[in-house]
Image 1 (cartoon, rainbow, N blue to C red):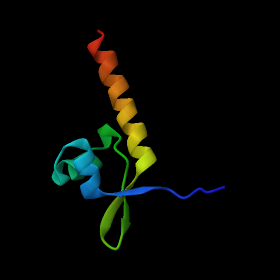
Image 2: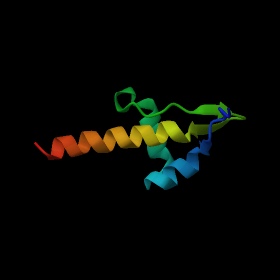
Image 3: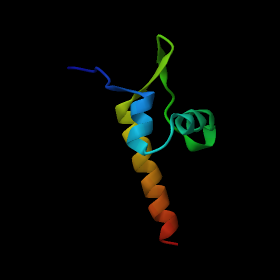
Length: 69
């Protein structure tokens, strides 16, 4: 079995969410958001692509639940 994780660079994560790199840095520091923590490789931040998708799905579901109220 292949258990290799797919990693995304921080600038690519920012681009995919349509926010600045600085926003991603703030999300990482804000523990209440539960944003996936990066893995640092050679002073660069990388994020687990699956963890990002899970986080996005949870946020969308939470948002949809609040809108239904």
